[in-house]
Image 1: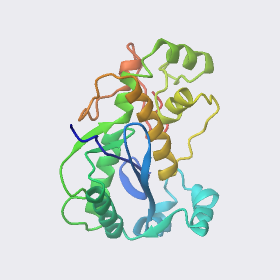
Image 2 (image 1 turned 30 degrees about the horizontal axis):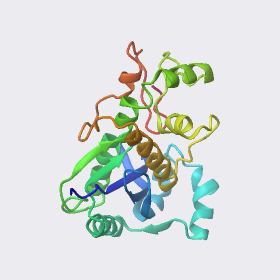
Image 3 (image 1 turned 45 degrees about the horizontal axis):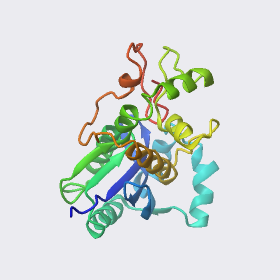
Image 4 (image 1 turned 180 degrees about the horizontal axis):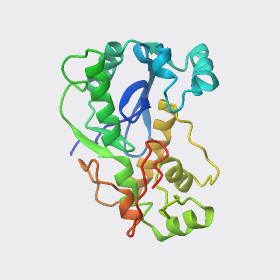
Length: 237
């Protein structure tokens, strides 16, 4: 019997689209969405750089979220090298088969950028594995359903260019049944909704788009797409 796959779902919060990760979280889970292990860390070199952090898209969360999280111990601040070491250790300890993220191309790119910027050596992940873009998976399964298109139109989940929104916040509203849900935009919190979205996609029993990265999945939902700009996190289109 083949071993069931183990998934590592990760999320990053960055200063801008170019990178500079300051918050990174991940969960180890199975395809049913059962979480085995979680971590959430702030990147000391970036988070304590006031000039850099004031340019962060969600800079206000330093006070509205992260101060309380640090005090409560739900997030810890570590140097980038230590975060990478913990990620690699978890990767091997749990026998991870697949690395996943919602818009995986973005997260993997900014992790590489941060690693290079902060003097990291070698690769962040200890070995090659499959990659699953949960955004691609969601657009191929749940978000391409007529029910979602009708709901999104009725609720106004439509971009200025007229495209139905397909970001994680909207995917989770659909699979969770909470039309008013607002994404937290802190790494581990976002990871946990992405785990739930992924599990619901697996329940559709469709082909899994392993290693399809940067595939512009929003176009699957929007066949006659307008010329929208994309913003990581909100994913306007």
